Image (cartoon, rainbow, N blue to C red):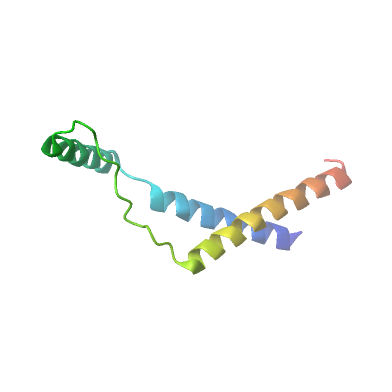
Length: 89
């Protein structure tokens, strides 16, 4: 049982760090929008260009680790569900 809890906790930590990495403050969002509007005005088309992604190349180790973490989360959740069904809780 402790192994399942440890695996689930590890998955939660990885998921939380990923959410924090992708989070932007309202000031950052406003700044990016202003930059895109300025680019659209300069180009004269009136269309706001798609924002270029700063992280186009994700390292292979990060993709593997993220995939493993998601698999661990799913298997831990399945194991806990099975255990609850067996115990009757």
